[in-house]
Image (cartoon, rainbow, N blue to C red; front, side, top):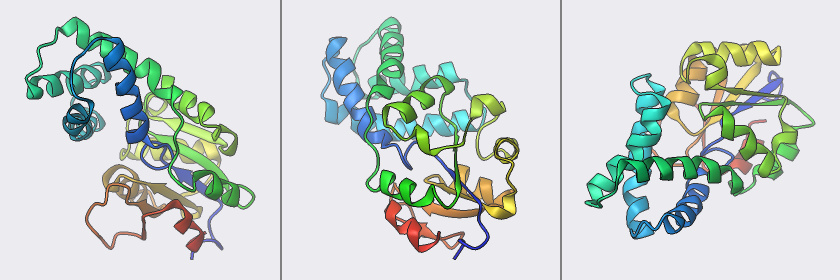
Length: 229
């Protein structure tokens, strides 16, 4: 479908290639015990996962800072659970979370298979809103850094997806054009609409089983990319 015109394939990282929810759960399992925080892990994650998405949206929209994101997403969960915890303990958990998260390396099924398939045919790149200090560690520890030519993060760009500036930076860094590029990601707002606005082709990896749409092709497994590229 796209194979005759595309030269560059841009991927989101978290929730698209790197299994954020699984790695995040393993991180909390470790640090909650180490910090003697007596909460049920499954109950904690049930509150944390949607809260994290909400605070990331605020961060993406420049409504909160990185520091506020890291603190508030945890503080709000403990408050909602009615679990008493000091601000100092919340900040310690936040620091431990960032320090430990990249050490886990679970990927979505077929990630390596699809990267091996694409690498000989296209230049591959990453565009991520994640924090600079941990995204490269995630790529390296999961052994997929070798597949990517350019890794663009929001801190380099000074803005976050879906802001056009980060897509412009990615294209310039890759010496690519939007007309010959495709963006593959899980966020309809940040990855798909953001890239389409810039003229990219797009494939939506519907990792969260969100509502159907006709904005672009939707896939539920990374192997399905072979249908289009």
